[in-house]
Every structure is written in structure tokens, then in C-alpha cells.
Image (cartoon, rainbow, N blue to C red):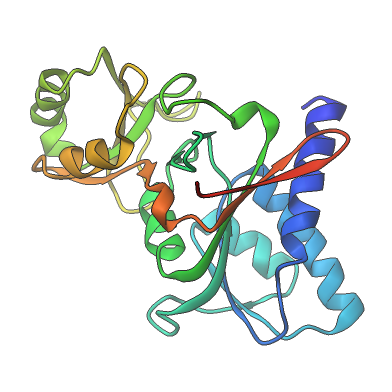
Length: 234
């Protein structure tokens, strides 16, 4: 990671920490920018004595929260969250998102959509006019449905569907924390991401799609090496 990119991520993470208040139930997403958020928030808690409860979206996030001695709970214990902070792989001009680069988008969507205030933190490289200009859409799929779902995605206009591989020293595909696989799917830039999200989810065998509708997003904090910008729904 270059110095400028790390600085951009840190600026976005620091700004997000300002939105955390004492007594809140906080959903915590996944990714490198969120990991910086966790570190900076831990420093603020130590300094100010904030009392918050965190709800992690992945085992990796759980490990980091535990490492920094956060209070950790589950969504079953606290189904209504005050705020969720998460990253994104791509953000369009209407705050629609593509998430799932870390294969955790199913749990991320459940937690993020449960929050009264859902704030996204990204660096400037993640901004696009339309979704799919830069990224494939990750789709979590039950393993026995790989071929069936692939055929349906091609009928819907997908130009490429790839089964995501595992780690370099692991045979076979990546397996999610829920025991499923990821189909990374390329479409032409999306005119209506929310409609595409709904349509893909109707395919039998699809667990969750990595399109997050902008209507669920409160704001997007975009970090640059020298500043931050705040994007809100139009």
C-alpha cells in the first residue's frame, strides 16, 4: 500500500470515529480501512472512556476487536444497531455499493442494514459514476448451484462469471464463513443497481449479492491524501 493510499484511508477512518458516541451499539465491517477505524476507535475509547458494544461482520473483524479489548456481542443479542461503519469496493454517484472483496458481504449486509445510521468509509479510488465500471459483483452461492446460477447470470447479461479461488496453497475455491462459494460476476456498468440486486437474489441457490442499495446508506466518507469529502444521497 502506497503512502498516499494509506493516508487517504486513515483520513476516512478518523472522520468516521467522530460519529461514534458513548453508549452506542456499533456494527463493524471488514476491510483494510475498517481495520484502521478499529485501531483509531480503540485509541479514542482508551482516551475518553467511551462505553460501546460492537457487532462484528466477520471472524477477522472479531479477532481485531478482541485484540483491542472491545466489548463484542451478536446481532441476535442486539438486533437494532445505532450505527454501522463499513468499507466498500466501489461506490457510485447515488451511493450504491459493491462489497464482498473479502467474501463477507452476506454478514456485512445483515449487520449494515440493521443500523439506523450506515456510514461507508473508502479511499478516493473506489468512486465511480456507475457500479461495475471497476469491479466485479461478488455473489455468494450454495455450492451445488454453481452451474445453475452461472447460466442464469449469463442470461441476465453477465459478460464474465468466475468462481473465486482459495488461498495460494489451498486446493479448490474459496469457501465463505457460511460454507458457500463466491461467483465474481462482471456486468456492463449498471443503470439500476437496486433492480439488479433484487433480480439476482431471485435465482435459486443465490445466498446474497454484493450490491448494496444506496437507500440504506446514510453517507460515504471519502478519504484523500490531503482531505476528506462527505457524500450524501441525492
